Amino acid sequence: MKTRITFLCVTMLLGVFCFAADKPNFSGTWVLDKDKSFSNPAGLEQTMTITHENDQIKLTGKQKTTRGGEVDLNESYTLDGKPTDFTPPNPPNAKGKRRASWLPNNKGILIEDEITSTSPEGQEVTQQITRKWQLSQDGSTLTIDYYFDGPRGSFESKRVFVRKKQ
Image 1 (cartoon, rainbow, N blue to C red):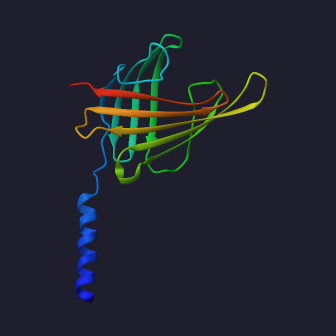
Image 2: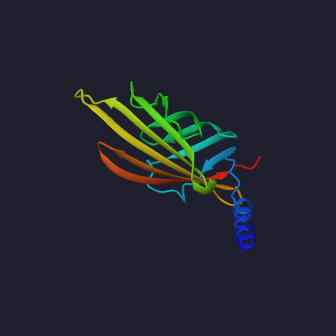
């Protein structure tokens, strides 16, 4: 009986390891699919180039909106779950803490930013931005869900990107 229970436990553990999901690799050039995205700034266009090695992600690109014009993107993430300081591009003189980690079962990543700045009235203002990245099974689509919480309330948006063919 003891041997049978031990055998069943070992078999179950092996099954868990065999079916554990590989971590997705987000490397590539990605272009926003406006038709599948929603709740974004007017006229949003975005292209990103992502380099992903182990737990390091480097993102560069361009983002353009009707109201905000064109902005260069240059971000990096370490997927270890530890908070790090970063300098947000907006508002000026803001300070940020960022934590990036793998989602359960390596189904994607979670990036959490807390940005603190001073309002024109001199009050400290904090906003939180959470992004959940998930890659389609075939690796051709990257979906980023955004969750914003700040002084003007809370809202969410979705950006769907397609991998640009090389």
